[in-house]
Image (cartoon, rainbow, N blue to C red; front, side, top):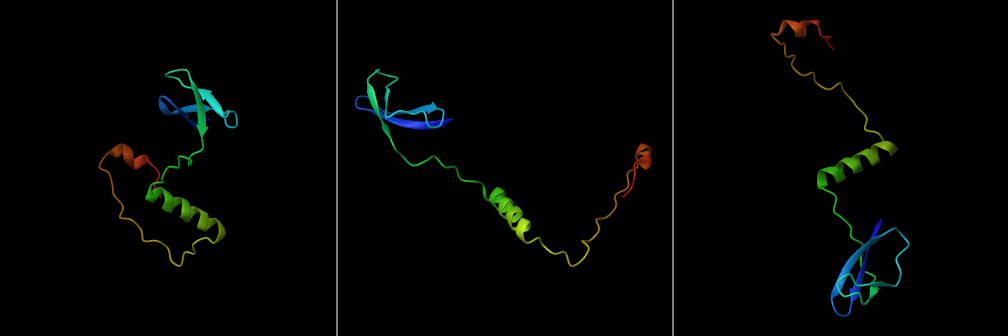
Length: 92
């Protein structure tokens, strides 16, 4: 679905959501029922949040040239639970 903008001479601009490619050059105004001409405006693009954009860029770069690991990452300290049921869980 796409959002199309129309402008009525009497009531001003309004938006209509229609399947892509089905919008005509004119439509009926929902307020007054008069003819409204289609307005060709800039697409409504949203801005991607910076952390998401960086993650997407990093994923795209790694597809072409993966990062090379030169050493084994440091181990995290092992936390032991005092719950006896946890002792039966597998350890890494």
